Length: 504
Image (cartoon, rainbow, N blue to C red; front, side):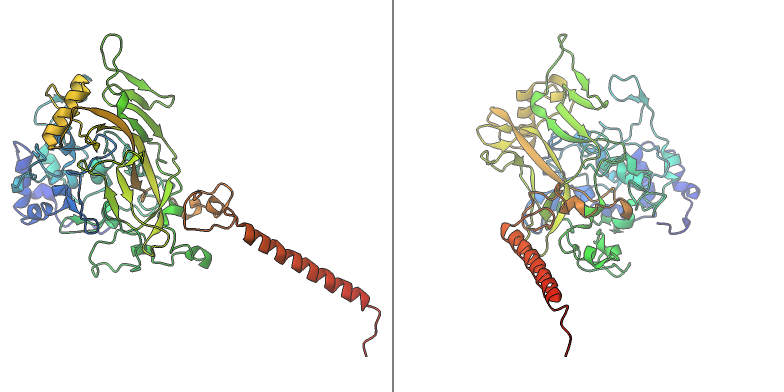
């Protein structure tokens, strides 16, 4: 969304001309003018990685939850905090750094594309030439901080995508509807973000106020009934379709009749991972650690060139053009936390659960990516386990392929008890789909749900003509047809019998 040319040329600010010894000096220079920015950032979930859920009371956020990808950030901080909006958070048992200069301004405001937080430095860019990936022979040079600082601007898709597109260890791995194809997407992939469409940046929908960004996957605005937003006159928290399109967005009443039941995304995101980037749908950690005959790590690829096995991570399955799974959703997400005992009679274990149902007026039918796999758990305490996967120490799984040591280290670092006995349990995790919105001409047609191969098959609480069948309703319908034909027949016979009679 174009708002006009910038009113400041940051190349003209003496404080930003450098030289800078490290990235924290750039932040100090920024704060010379933007005096309240660091304090604002430190109050956001992007900084704290903590979310106190108002409905469930659970303490969530990246700092606290376990996921079905690499497990937990805790015990793996140096790698995971390369996606933190700060510098130097090396111990997640402690709050993030408190100094103003620890805030990373450039990660969100670089417009050159040359700023990159090195993957193993707890949020810092490299300050010396370093090899990455390890063993590749490729050298990453330190960024030109003065040049980048002189070209800061509003956040764009690439800024947000630097973390949100690459979560879980690679491009498109986690969300399914967020990957690098959205940096410059065609209209057919995302009608809002495409330069051929509306050319929205992320912040056009995920509006901000004091660096607080609207939208949360822990408490989703699943059913916005407030209608069209008036910029500047709301609480800036409505990252919803209805805030632009209202509650009656169609030119056909029959389509608007579905709005109280279906999320907009259910019809308007026909599939995810549509931009040529595959998303991970299965991850089996139980097979990690297998080595070749010479004791070296193994990498295997599937027929499409996607990694299907790594000694460090186990077996994978990648997919593209994935049809979502559907569930009733009221916006509330509950998590299985690492200290919660598992009900092993209910497998797969839900890493998270989406609340809602057909009797709840606040629920809608939403599309989801459902991530499945196998993760380690304590066979005595019946709890999920934290795996220490990354680090230079000899207990990291990716260094020694020793599960007992990696699990013991992860438990010690996270404070979660470990009996020493472990196994692997199948899990699943729900990721709501809200991006990759197709043009209206590519939205689902009626047959997608009301045909014999309905996408909503198995979903309770709804009756879909064309898919569901009721014996009594079918009999009643045929009875009406029969009576209609009898009436037509009787009328025809009566006309024939009375044809020759003259009217008085």
